[in-house]
Length: 143
Image 1: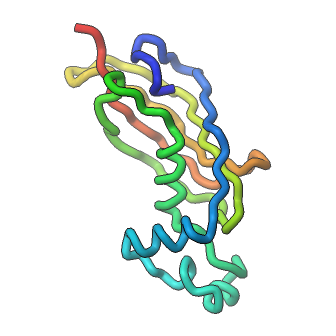
Image 2: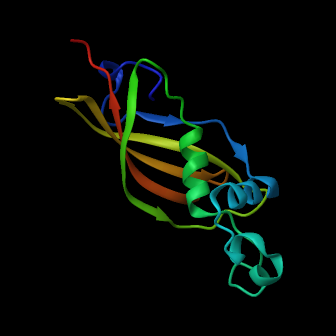
């Protein structure tokens, strides 16, 4: 969606990313990189005692991977303007296959540029939703 000019993005537009398989190394890398070594994500013995039965990917890692699957093309995209209403609705386990889905909700011209509001979902290859958020992206508009 964000690989084209602002003028070509319209409410109702739908975009889906390629799929990505989540590996144990992804989960452990995120724990090390972020400093979030909470046992549910890093300790299989602890995680086995939880309702999940095994370690799960950090919610913020799900958000990061989902955002990373979106093509952001310069010079169209100026910046990520914000995220609202982020919800992690289903756990993501090692070996899960997810993809990102964007649905444009609205576009508007602001003094800073074109603002696109879209629903960002991380979905499993089964179609079930893992995460949902409102994404706001600031884009260039012709002068």
